[in-house]
Length: 117
Length: 112
Image 1 (spheres, each protein chain N blue to C red):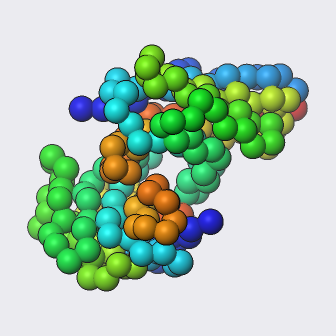
Image 2: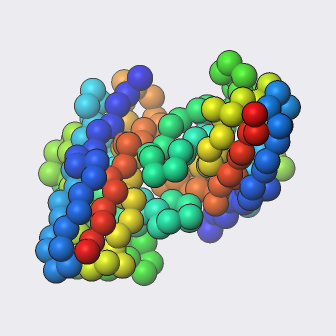
């Protein structure tokens, strides 16, 4: 089946630094990718929808200047947490919507756990 | 706005018991529904995907059903094992394979 990877799987950083998380569709093209966030003991919440070649659409309450999303190719979307703070510590998961050939469905990445000290 | 509810929030059963996890959603205009397993501190493991035109899917000891008209899905686990202990998440994917809405999950503990 289709595979989505995320890198890194784990990251620890100091407060104030920026962290970039990559989401790649390994064997299919994804015109749309979604970014989710999961706080401890909570479910996943959609942060933003990333469309290849255009600006991301952010959900209400998500700061677009803090969570920068770039979807420069059909197989890669990046989420950059700028000036990270401890409250940004969370589990970030992406999903990719397959284009033609694989069937219209979504495939989820394994997630990236961010800890901001 | 789609809302997904999972009941119960937590469940503890003895090994070998059959069990049912419930998921309900408010908007029946879905593309498909997916059940995931999440172990503590880990990512999502996809268990079953049911297309909106399907009624059920089976994989091993797992069976998931979908009733779009009533906005419900169930995940049936047969002959539960301690290794089944995890949080089970239900996700409803919107029209045109759009964004997913997750339930809060059911945390299952299977006691030896």
